[in-house]
Length: 140
Image (cartoon, rainbow, N blue to C red):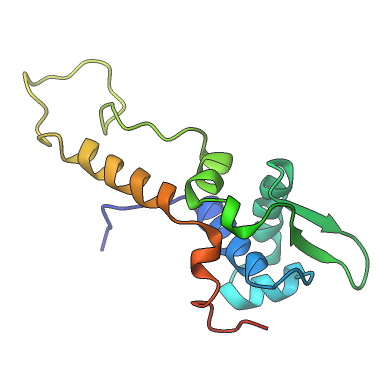
């Protein structure tokens, strides 16, 4: 069954990974632990972690005791910050079909996509990483 709401795999991995890193209370978290926690392949996860490092949210420490840690405080990073670091700036306006010319006089979706985008942006912008520290099931 198809869902109306969809995040790319890379964005989902980035969001879940940074929340796990944020919940680690400044301890380094390695790729293997993150992958096991969220049920992801380490190869795909590496791309998401690379994006987060490039965006300046996390730092990487190499070696057998290495891993990832936040560069900023968890209460300074929103889900929207992470989303836009991976996907680019979220656009509220526009056609869900990415079409410049519509065959209909008014949008057949009646403005619902715009409302959903506004609500999603508002939610993501209001949620900080620190809001999720106590919701992680395996917080070790």
